[in-house]
Amino acid sequence: MMGRQSADQAQFFYAFNLDARVPETHLLRRIDVFVRQALADVHSEMAEFYSHTGRPSIDPELLMRILIIGYCYGIRSERKLCEEVSLNLAYRWFCRLDLDDAVPNHSSFSKNRHGRFRDSDLLRGVFERVVGVCLAVGLIKGDGFSVDASVIEADASRYHGLAPEKIDWSTVKKPSRAVREYLEALDEAEEPEEGRKAPKVISPSDPASAWTAKANKRVQFGYGLNYLIDNEHAFIVDVEPTPARTFDEVRATAVMIERTEERFGLKPKRLAADTAYGTGKFLGWLAQEKIAPHIPVWDRSTREDGTFSRADFAFDPEKNQYSCPAGKPLKQFNRVYSKPRSGITHAGQMIYRASKLDCDACELKARCCPNASPRKVPRSVHEDARDEARQLAGTPEFERSRNERKKVEMLFAHLKTTLRFERMRLRGLSGARDEFLLAGIAQNLRRLVRLTTPAEPQAI
Image (cartoon, rainbow, N blue to C red; front, side):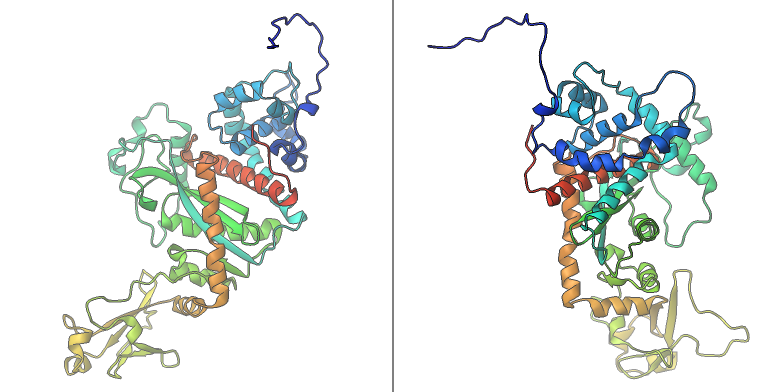
């Protein structure tokens, strides 16, 4: 006969085991052993950032576990996250909360993240301990790294951007944390770096973000999420936030490589990246560090008007001069100066010039310099490093690195589609650092359990 559910809920006592309700294949149960190692020293490291008097605070380990849940499952709202932890048995088990234990208020995350967590650099420490676990189990090889950046939209309206000279920050009565950090960075900034362009538009609410239209997206304010990964199993070994500008993203790569060597003793033998990283300055830095650049050279010397390109001129390093297709020399200096000159421009180039007499009498002038005389050929001070990168292109090792580099792009796709991280919730570079580190922690933990345990996580 047809059954009917009893509506009687008058039982007073229940025998309930929360641990028994979480399956062995559940993602949170599988990552718990690694999270315990990553959070083992949290209390001792955070002790000095808490007062020794007053009421006990919320356990920092509890807050970290809740944040890890949010980033592992793509729950972007902290208010929603607290509601889910309150209702979901697996979330309660992972957070070490009993059925009648209260869940922290969502406002607790902001207070701790902007205060104790940031002052103690807790998130960086947890991220590095997760990387240390990956190293300990032998999943990070350290021979080859890949680097790339992806634009994450800032929490700033694209319709309210202003030119920097039109914003008078002194009239802002109560500047936000992001504005204060931006102004402090301006005060501490040194001379503008070579190659850096001043922003044309900035956001009054999040001035550290960059006005960008990268990745064929609509123009928006955004931050660059920079990942440095180990090519063996695509583990993220370092994370760095930057404004969404190519100049800052390339510079951040050196910071990540140096920090990875300092913290873990890992220095790659080769680095894979796309053409945006193939600048002479960066390739020169890699040559200095003895890292093989598996990177296409960023080169705009090829001409498309039928005239000779720079590749048509042969360079003689012993004589320090070029030879044109007609066999005439191009030199840096065609006379001796009383005061020696470096011959290097502000852009880091050396200019080689032909003799005007040679060019005017040359039969190839129409194909070489029809509108100017004499012909000039620029050469980067890092041209030797660029030549080394050109020689590596097309080798089997280069092709393998190019294929491995796709792994970092897959991480970005997973982050945006599965983990729903397409727009920032925090403002300023410090907010971007917090969010990006948590994203790196979540992705490394998910990949760690996938490679160390055969079972697939059970969907909930």
